[in-house]
Length: 197
Length: 237
Image 1 (cartoon, one colour):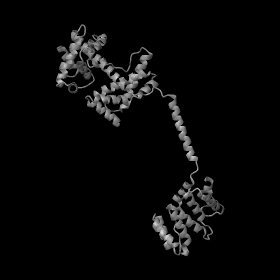
Image 2: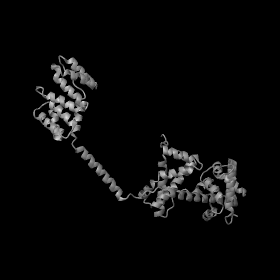
Image 3: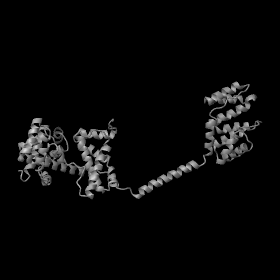
Image 4: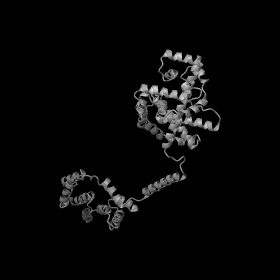
């Protein structure tokens, strides 16, 4: 089968903007968000979600699409609309299930799970048992205490920006300095956590 | 700085080679303190991701287009009213009889676009005029027909064609003059009244329409040339 290629100029513009990186990426994220925002209406109509829930599912879908595009996981086999619709509808199903039952979300793979999957079974099991989810909420609070630049650095890294781009954006001398600084910031965060000082 | 953190970060950013990776994974399974550091690293990165998601969601919410969740009923009513107006307007335009001037213009466009050639002993000049007319050279055609109106053998045709030249070039007064001359010609089936009616409908002064109707009625009643159109148009005028 011949793969469907990106045929919309708007798709191409958004994809190029997201992959280009740098500070300009933000504007293309916003363009992506506003371009398909009308889908939220379908979230309300088809999945009987509230306006806020539908908008929340849509935001999650957009963030997932951005992550996938930036990480090179989007192969342009479908249009952006098809791609984002599929993710959005899955998010809507999750929210609907969550609202109506106590069942776990089926389409949601947490960021933690995704990183854990990088480990082989035996290592994953050992690490998984030691993960304390209570730490996560505390870490969010401690993140506010490590300084603006450190926080920004960590957020940009998690947003998929490579070290060389972060260096340009935050005025570091080099990508190597960014890497060292990022680890120092993580260490700073660890030191603020009870039991890890 | 915690050296373990470098090692762990190298693993999760893909900076370790295959052997180092295998050693790392082995250590996770056998060294609980190390596994705890890995667990912390992953939890911290997840917490940062959570924060990032929250920031992005807030930024997106700030630019969310303001679209109503459901379309208010007036929206549908406005669309329905607009469609109704279009349908009624379309029906009215379709049903409305065409303007008299349009009837005449359509006839001129379709029937007088070309003149049929005639056979006559003095046909050469007349044919030349007709050929000029059919090529759209109305100036030459006018000169030829004008000259031929003084030649008895083709006078009637020349008057008719000259009137037609004036008609298609929108010189209605002159056309009417020629068709009046044509009407006076002793012909068994005189096309003059019909052509004059055409010219009157095109000129369309307030007095022209009643006069055109009278002529069309005459054409219809006397079965003169153009009687089919006359009967049809009289129903529409």
